[in-house]
Length: 410
Ligand SMILES: NC(=O)c1ccc[n+]([C@@H]2O[C@H](COP(=O)([O-])OP(=O)(O)OC[C@H]3O[C@@H](n4cnc5c(N)ncnc54)[C@H](O)[C@@H]3O)[C@@H](O)[C@H]2O)c1
Image (tube, rainbow, N blue to C red; front, side, top):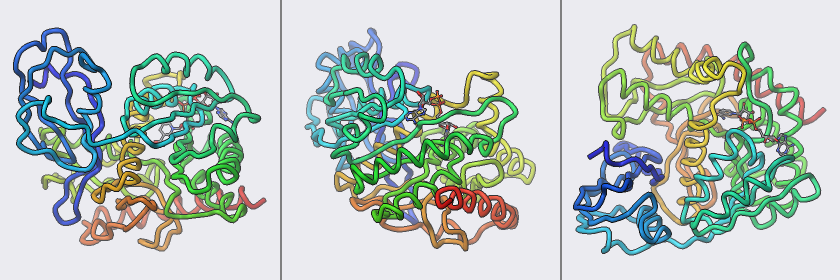
């Protein structure tokens, strides 16, 4: 069955503390020309398969009626159970949110925009870049999904790209080349993020802001300072996107422990660079035991996974496709929270009081107004390894945060 399902959509972030299901996980859709007979579908909402579907499908990727099939693939406010056929699924969502992607023509921006274009929660997709974005928007606009994709180019159109937007995603900037750290990007990306967030403050100060541009450990504090200077800072709505660290941790742990990928959830805390990325393997769901060697090996691999991709791409950039996947998951989670879903949890680098650091990545509960709660239980009962790693990351993370704050205030 799994071999016959190839198209992946994004389902909800859905965990409950204590009884953890996880953030956004794939929801399998039928695909392929051979899907003419009866097939079982597992409708994933959160960590566990929430329902087992049997359906008659003659569909290709988006089905005979692409929009209907797409709508049917997303169930935003309820976990569908005991569903007999896809035909009985009623669309529960209405496309109504506006999303802007700043840096939409880039390596991350293009696949991210495609994935956001597939969300039935999105009515307007604003694609902004300083170059080549018209073609991206023209291309995407031919996809028969509910949202309208529009191009905006150059500083003079930035304000229009942002007006009325609910979620702004910022992957604008330069990526790493082999031998570079994320901090090496600071000199270029700090200025880009500062300028873009100033425009966000002027045009859509109530939007959720998702910062992807590296170094996230510094660009998020820069964004916070800019928003403060403009008098519109809402710490609950400013997010550093660390979802890729969680995605990687889940993948690597599932491989190592031979677990079903869909079941695995590993919270990742701290920041988004090197040793500041701290996967809490002791909090893996379902619970798994690791030898000391496995903990060291997995932790180091998760911390260096971005470099793995940078080196494999050998000068052609850093992670783009997995990053787009992770960013789309975070966008979808945010939209579901905005849509009133009360069970949305994700890890993110946010203003935080969980530690003595002003910004810290941890699991948070998302709601209509942004961060609703912190899952401080994740930081309780850490192993010695995790406690030491947490202390060890603090100086570097503090320095990166201070560097961002100083840049924004100079
Ligand atoms: N948070 C994460 O987990 C994560 C993961 C991977 C990459 N990244 C970061 O994401 C960023 C983008 O990576 P990429 O691979 O897409 O790079 P890319 O060079 O392929 O694309 C960047 C895009 O940003 C655009 N851009 C540059 N300056 C701009 C400006 N002032 N306004 C609007 N657009 C502008 C460029 O024209 C380009 O289209 C990098 O900083 C990279 O380090 C973050």
